[in-house]
Length: 272
Ligand code: 13P
Ligand code: ZN
Image: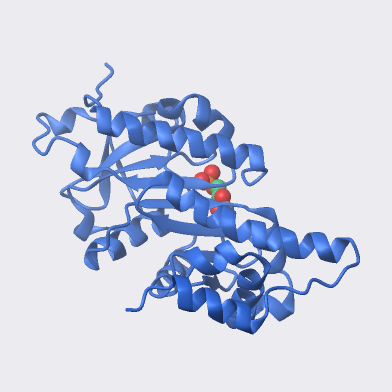
């Protein structure tokens, strides 16, 4: 028996944006095989009093999230390919609602657990970050994790494992990065993919940044909507690409000077 909540126009629009970003991630080569995962806090688009909640299939998580009880999230599936998500969101993701018993969730929409569906293996990063954002009453509801090649390449280079050096490099390669990514990118030292250790280290980095790099693995960004969140990573990866294009041509890139970067800061950064 297929049980699914009615999808409002607003929720439909969010799912359309997710599919669009999934398609772009695949086209850019940032989502090889099943790489990458996406979640969005969609609680405000879910009717508060879902009747007969127990009729929606429920499943256990190996960790409890009491603060998220009653909250609903669009979340991609473990092993789901971005290229498939782009074509068929409901077959490659679900909307889950954390149950009262907070180590369980109900699937309200999308692919069912009885069809072998499991939320992304990075579920602990996603849920821990949503909990962190809710605690801070932060406006961000979107989390995108992807594998942008050139940014990852830089995390393999000793010199750029220092946040200050990495940000100086990225800002100096693309003025838009300096204007838009004012908090710079955070660096999360390598942790096993899908681990709680990775989730905790990511939250620490998100105290100061909206985009973080997972050393030798990928990138994770938070934002208020799908396309804006994607754009931030795209801007940063462009900076990395320009740098590596010069290097692979055997050229030494000059980059924006300190004075030029200071000028952008004066002109564009908020004065708060
Ligand atoms: P999932 O398919 O479980 O989402 O994993 C992809 C990934 O990129 C892990 O970091
Ligand atoms: Zn990954």
